Length: 396
Image (tube, rainbow, N blue to C red; front, side, top):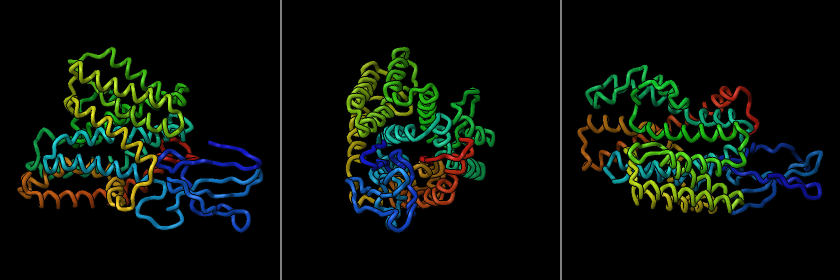
């Protein structure tokens, strides 16, 4: 958003995680031509003043850019805290038998919808948007697919044979997910947790299509209409992925509310609630995440949590939770089947809480390694390669 008043350009950018440009912490000009103003909003954002030929340009810069921080300065701590809650819920479900672990995945979908709204805003084209998504997901996915498949082939007795993919399955996974398996080739997922990636990519493809046909500014209503039409054409006896899209819609709606479009946001939230209630009342089934009143409650909680995370600064004591959220994606990819194999090797049952807690910590360290050495350094190169040009404001 750009406001011009009396020679002033106010560039009200958002942190990268919320869809705004990634700012360079180095001053662009020196001396009297550039000063940093000591103003911070409730999001911990300051204003950087840069004198240009057309006036003075003020850009928001995160307070963390002025000092050191465990988390990258461009990320939202509140959103990462929600990611941390989601992944801990999923891991606790698989490792400790905590019920309703798929609710953590539903929270991930809501977070994704929120972040994607800003990503579409900052992308010039549909190709650039999809390139950002692939750059964000493919590096960690590729290394996880190779490692999981190698471990399963090395220790096949530690896992159900039906869950051991061939190397063709492993390689094709990297093609099938971003292309929505348009070739309709049957393959075994390298890990049971990968089912949610299929849903994620369906949502990304829908958003890219909306951008491609020139309806970027109407992303939320178009997604709502698409989901309503798909629902009207569906059959309760045939499971489909549309019942997950209500969670993406609430994420989009909260983001839309943050942009000041309150009417559209309320309509989006209403559509999401109507879709979820309709699936419950008409008896729709979903093997991956059973549909019921508890899911509707998760929808409401996800909406409130996203609103709080986007509007208020997270307390400092939640930084460790945000750090878990930072590595939630590689942790999600690695933990399920490899965790099953690790505990089978140790002979650890669900009741062996200490052993399973140690296992969770091992996977957390492994996930951090993937983030530092694979995901973060390869994100931009992959994005630029797929986009076919250097991005002006790379916001993965």
